[in-house]
Image 1 (cartoon, rainbow, N blue to C red):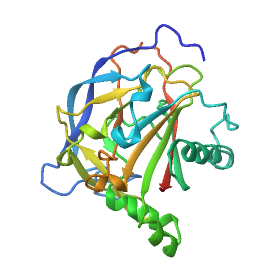
Image 2: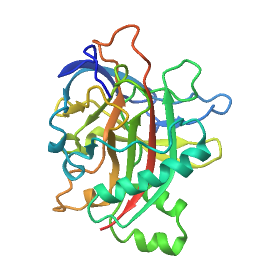
Image 3: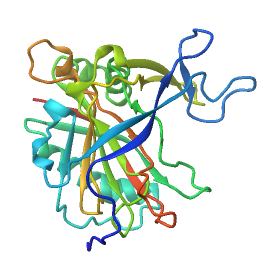
Image 4: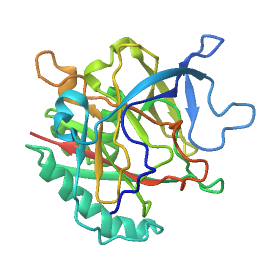
Length: 284
């Protein structure tokens, strides 16, 4: 894809929204769908901080899942899925591509179970828009819960004895390089345990999972990949069981991330469209 000259490049300082705890000291929660009567969508707020964000364009290979919990993959062949408007078509045509991508780019991986996907569009009428709040999609308890939810009990018990991860595969759907609301992500090696706040994630079905909100810490190192195109993918590692083990060499295995408003973006820039596919990855 041709990259036009108006795409913002290089380091930038932008405002990111971090965790502000509930004023009443309650445990934080968030409703995925419309909340029950009398309850807020979430009971915590945002603390905005100006943060320097480094552009990894041209240095993509320096970042790894084991050290940073993110990895860029370039020059991916065209997908058989082109419209990204039908869930059934995405599952039939795009999921197999994602499974193959993960198995080939995560050394030692032996099994991939894709459990959902989300499409985000900047249109005011879109069901899901880019999320401008720093978060991690999973916590250690919710990752194990996911394994048990999506696999038979006996197989889940066996797989939980080995290495298991949750990895999101993120790509833009725009025909042109992404200009508005790019994705920022903090190297897992720079995220402290105290920065991570579990949030109860409540679904209208009654299912309760956990995500994590993130407190601001000046030691965090934030990155983005400028002008992403449709033949590029980001692997976003939300959880890695090896990250819980002292001396494993995995530095956290949990990726804080958020969409952000780049102050250099043109007012009439095309709205960002993207898809993220979430998968359990097992092995080695």
